[in-house]
Length: 323
Image 1 (cartoon, rainbow, N blue to C red):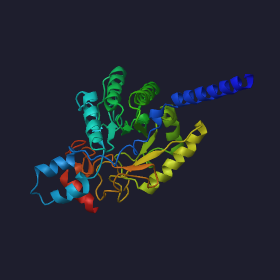
Image 2 (cartoon, helix red, strand yellow):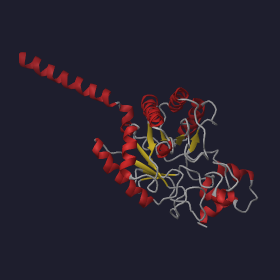
Image 3 (tube, rainbow, N blue to C red):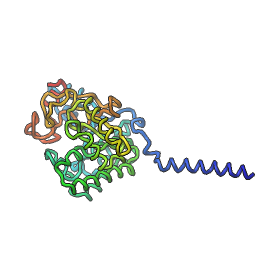
Image 4 (cartoon, rainbow, N blue to C red):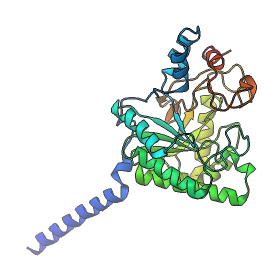
């Protein structure tokens, strides 16, 4: 009986240990949102589609609709989105009702676009941002989603003081924690610029300081034009540098406008082309359309006179054909 009691005790101890391990691991966080859905979600209110609906007789409309408007791409959320929990909840909920995976961009960090200024703004304070991002995550809840967190937030550190950088890192760490706690089926990718901007070891250091260890991964080439191959090499180099911190991370690449690569300009350059539509794999964990082709980068280049985010049909049309 003694040997049996010991065997039972050992068995119970093993079961308990396994249960605790499952609890610690957080089974919800192990879920893969791409396997919970049947493909990426196409925003039914994207800017290209709105323009096509409003201009059915325009000779460019059919091509813009087929090549851009009907391609799954991200929706950006910021201080224009109204009640953010309601906005992200409605968007993720609609995608879930179609069994599709939505791509959302959180773009409301204080002093947003601090270097360039074309998309300036953001939350008015750290407290306001913390409240906003918590509601963003709560709106998604348990639905599957992909979130790209704060494009340019790390890339613009050169225009910030040490105190500003420290505060921004604290906000990003908290944001990652909020998604982990409130949106367990969301993969969060912290923005990491692009190969033409910041060298890989520096970006790895910035990612580590901003808490990328708690995120699913990092995002590359958001709103830029650099080729997929160059971004893949850069992402691998960032991971080689991250290894010195004890981990590596998956990464995604924005391929919406990189079909002709970059000419070195980032603000509405001419001659660019749409790239590979949103998909898994392709050198990264995912290739995603994060910036909708045809949406202006600001009052610059072939978008002179426009504002950031404004849909420019002629730019979109030329981007389909690469001229």
